[in-house]
Length: 342
Image 1 (cartoon, rainbow, N blue to C red):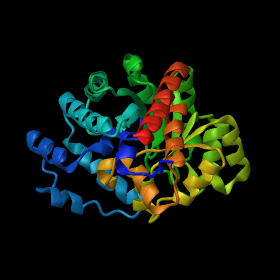
Image 2: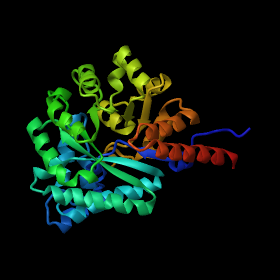
Image 3: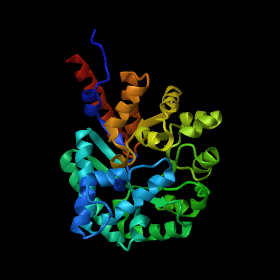
Image 4: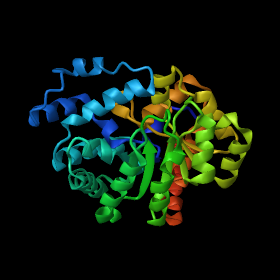
């Protein structure tokens, strides 16, 4: 009998969907420096080491300070295209077959960047990602530390680009910014046919109340992070019953909370919740999707079956057709069978 071991080769080759990655969070130091030079922007750092030295955060707020300041180098449509394509190349290396990637319009609009500039750059990259065998879609996130009115204005701006955007999300600083603050823009987005998800960041003030608002009132289709749901057994059971997906990002958890939240992730998996593993802001947290899988495997008692279940869940909770889901699940089955036969 062939022993099934979790190895980097197995994890990297395993077909996956990525449902929780911020395109702005894939801005690697090398590209940040290159774009700063191209666009004549003084970012206050001159070397890769200088940039990495700023990656010293111990909370969501301290991370966001670094994250938003780094976006200043993104100025032209080609900058946004290049950023997304660099990520899609890494997606191919990680055998990500389908990706639903976040982007933050307000972070760019506030800098004077036109909506057409970033959406056209990102969308063009999504189209070209097909040549890499990566199916890519976009999720437009509202910044929760900005006003609901601002979110509604962004939704209006997006109308001319409706076919380029699959869904809407909610991210940024959760403190004092509950989901209900955004019930109007989300209601309008749902009426316009957008798919919906929201961040429920780990260990926030009023975490359970925020999760209940997102799930029971706004009725989002997916929950990003969200492992605090375990504090409410009834909510956990309900999410399992309706097969609602949770997206977990171990490496970013470790930066913000000093732990991967692996015990919580595995408990949710054991309870039949459709939780999956993703990379969040990989350029800032030190690893892409396979690195997140491996971080869990290296630090917790995971089986090959657990790893495969995470991958299956990623496709099953994605916003693709049932036929596509079956196709990708078949890819996983064939990959695992062939891998352990040889």
